Length: 59
Image (tube, rainbow, N blue to C red; front, side, top):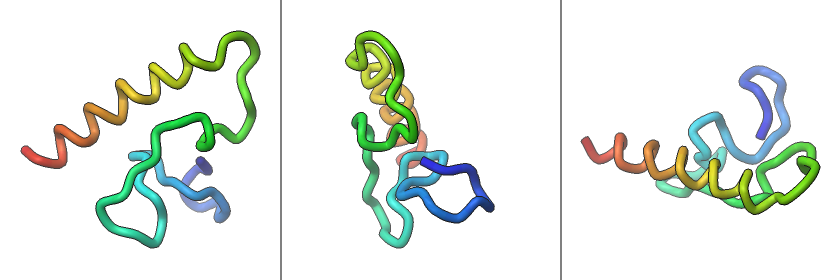
C-alpha cells in the first residue's frame, strides 16, 4: 500500500486494487514493511478495517 500521489503500491487506502473495480485485498501482502512480532494480529486489524470498508460500500 502506498500513499496517494507517491505512485507505486498495489492497493489504495480503502484496500481496493488499483486499476480494477470491486476487488479488495486484506492480507499481509499489502504491508510495505513487515511488522515485528506476530503478523497475524496485524492482519486481523486490517481485516476488521476491510470489513468496515465493504459494509460502507453497500450503504
